[in-house]
Image 1: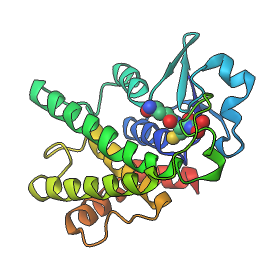
Image 2: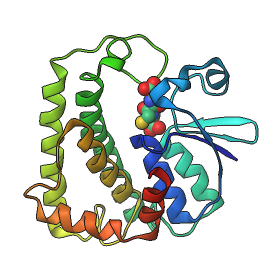
Image 3: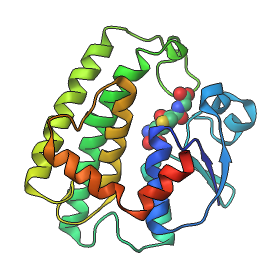
Image 4: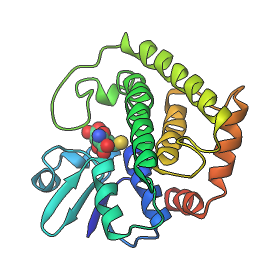
Length: 214
Ligand SMILES: N[C@@H](CCC(=O)N[C@@H](CS)C(=O)NCC(=O)O)C(=O)O
């Protein structure tokens, strides 16, 4: 099992946090996104989508962070990060979709449309699509709305999807970190987000991740 990885980037970050929570040992290949190595022929041959993370397992490629986590979840079922009963599973799925669409994509919209390196390739992968600078502010507004939503959610529950730590916390924390790239501090004036983030940062899985990228 080989993880093609660039741990500083948001999608690899969430898979790395998941792997750490599960204490899974994987072999890693570093794909340097800062040098666009994801578009090198040798990587495109393995993953034509041109994104990381992706996992090579049994001569097959699995890309998409949540799909990778799902596969790993079958291999190492505990701790349960996708829920333990139908209601937990549904709630976690509900939150991870909301976080991906309204959080990760919002920050991504502001980031990708603002960076000169992605001017002609605004979406991850090999396709050439031009950036639209007007979307930077829209992405920032959407990101702020997302953090307002997260603050409200964390007022009533200890973790994002309820009273247990789950993949939803990993995803939401990843958005919080990614937002620094567009100079939005999701903790500012948000006591529930701040307390929750500080709690997560005490977990061994998070400390191990920070060590990996330092
Ligand atoms: N939906 C995919 C997104 C993967 C993705 O966008 N990865 C980024 C890094 S966070 C990437 O590979 N970027 C390469 C590029 O910009 O071409 C997932 O969940 O894994």
